[in-house]
Length: 276
Image (cartoon, rainbow, N blue to C red; front, side, top):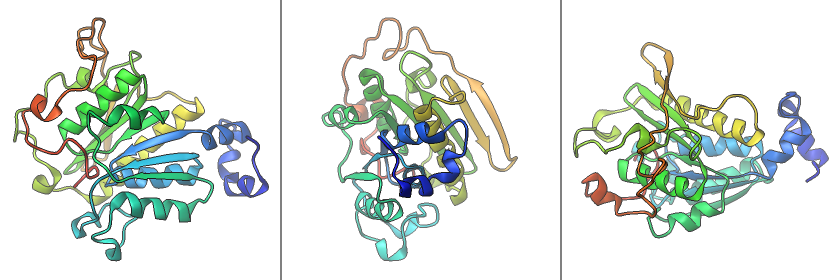
């Protein structure tokens, strides 16, 4: 596609970068990114994707805005409490950038609908807050050959991993088995510093933009771990596990399963956002 004069002005600071230029901006406008969870991670990520000019952004979330969301889910306001998150997020993104097609999906991501939803996108950003959802998204992306950017945070720490099927580790390589039920507290139980959501989300967004543009070195097979109290980052190399049941040399998982039973949890299989 050819950039219009208005687009050249809007994206001028980005186009000035030699690694982007006009050709890179055209790649962004033609890209399709799915954000699963319009919460602490997904919401700011969607905002920066829209600002960068990513042409199609899907937002999957079945929940409504709650007052306890507002300290970290920064596109929502007090008057949005009670409204559907995906719908409100889409309204804000369209106001921010009319170039962008925003597709709100007010639904739970399940083993039944995940393949069809993910099929329409190039990259998936996982902003969910529970293990059943994370395993579901990981498996669906690996089976579909889609690039996935995983992010998570709790208390004062966060992590980001880029999953490119069979090029590096997937989520199951990192966590072959889910933790025992109740062993990992949720953010509603353990708390979280609101600004930390922005740090992790921006790293996820940056990785997605790098992947679209084909620049830099993505966090494929490298887990970036962030400690806000020490203000310290470290990268842990995570090799692909040859015996991984999803992305290994002889995969045994060839379809999506009942992730609540897999994780031993009686919780929702779809996210309300990174922090519910």
